[in-house]
Image 1: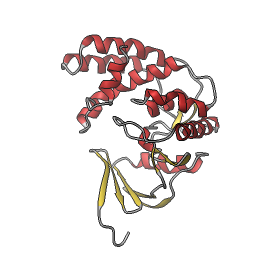
Image 2: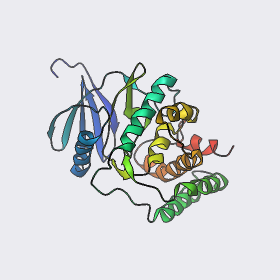
Image 3: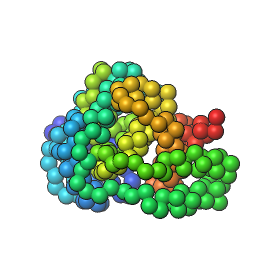
Image 4: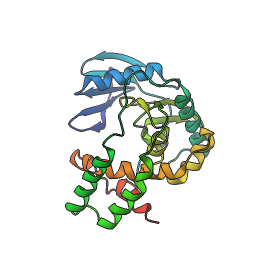
Length: 249
């Protein structure tokens, strides 16, 4: 990394920091169990992932991927329909693989968590009660039985890289676990509903779009307080609050 002219902060809060130094990403995490999952999931995943260069706790160094991310939340995606379809095909390949051997997050208690977060949003005047109540109603469809798959678990639009119309890699695997396949599809298309058709063209199977819509509401309701408390702004254009408003149509 000699001769690097600048260090870019990719993400930073009180739990973890990711820096880009030249062609290397440095991930600093307060929880080494998350890094353990990140490294092992990249080893097991049947899709392109970054090369692990070295690990010296609490730091993990991985090589940068060629190409660019599918996009950013709150901005139009610059990627082509074919690139989105390629992302869908890669996700399907991941979901068809044997799930990782560790335990994933359970849905037990999710109703109580949803009730608590909705109450916080309303009681603190963050969002109108009618908006919260309607999205809570929509979100219920996501709380259902499902067959566990190899789920990425944090498949934000910035975590899939493409070069032209090909997927060059998927990053940030610390939330990988056996889980709901539609959660991955929903997180990737959060705020980019217009790209869902392209994604599903590559995913290649019947998908209940109402459940994906439910995950958009559920994720946005559950994440808003955490985002606010960790220095992010869910009220930014195209982000979580706009997603909740879009569900009212």
